[in-house]
Length: 97
Image (cartoon, rainbow, N blue to C red; front, side, top):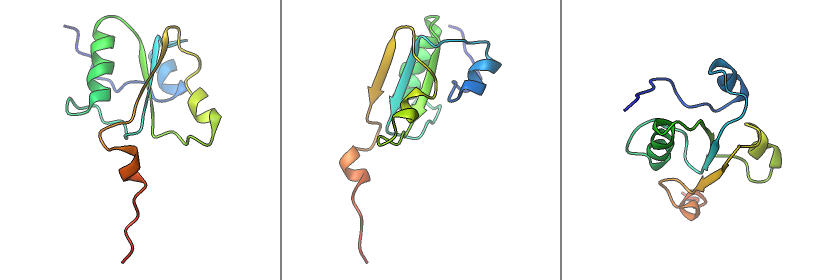
């Protein structure tokens, strides 16, 4: 198993540092990007990376702004989308004191 200690790309600048012109997969997640095995996004991304694919992360995009989803360009193989660890409806709950 190849272990990459660098964070996965979250910007075009990160892609440039890794000499990546186009990612194979882009994962869009409702969570913050945390590179830890308790987060599904990190597990999926690292498994794909270990198989030789390039993977980038778009974390917590503003779904009202289409440019948020274009920030890493067009993937060669596909977008992978997950809601993250917290249900999206829970993120919208507001507590009034």
